[in-house]
Image 1 (cartoon, rainbow, N blue to C red):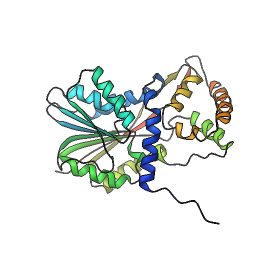
Image 2 (cartoon, rainbow, N blue to C red):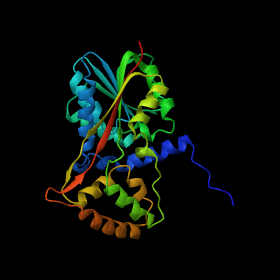
Image 3 (cartoon, rainbow, N blue to C red):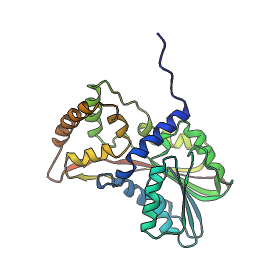
Length: 279
């Protein structure tokens, strides 16, 4: 019996791009406000200054890029890159709403950003590095385009993020013979691993901190909105239409049992890893 061919790195990138094209229009819904919380915390740690250049990798709908553009305006300039054209479309509309003129958006491979060497003072990547097939190679390429003494910061999810909801989600999926592998957002969920990959890629003065970005959801339907409008959607799309109806009913019933007086706590344990390019 022959085994199924394994997807190539390019196949994986195409799958991720297609998935985020699907969820782009709902990505900024209230249940996913942790993306903006992460952007705020990331920039609070980084403290970018005016008259500088910042690259936001896997910019999505522009949460980090737009906030950074506001911080370093008018002289500073922000570039945001993403493989998903639909996400970039939403980011462009978001930037227009803020009347920003110092931000540029590009469709570009995060593993191999096409910029001059020693160009950016800062590089940010919010919940995106773990999607890349070769994370170390990507970090080395990012190092090339950072200026000497330039700073990189990326965020990943900690080991307890989205518990216990994710465990309930995974157990329900198993009933439909769908397994969630420990890949993508489960990668880089250990602070030691974050430090090691930065060290291997040639960065210096590495610091890693864990922060809680959690909040209360009003009800289980808010959790469904999070599932439907983020990377979790890729697993839901594997269900037939009839199975999806049954899955939603059963899963939301058990999630609703988690409700307390304040609602349903959403644990968003995030890891922020910061490092410098050696001078």
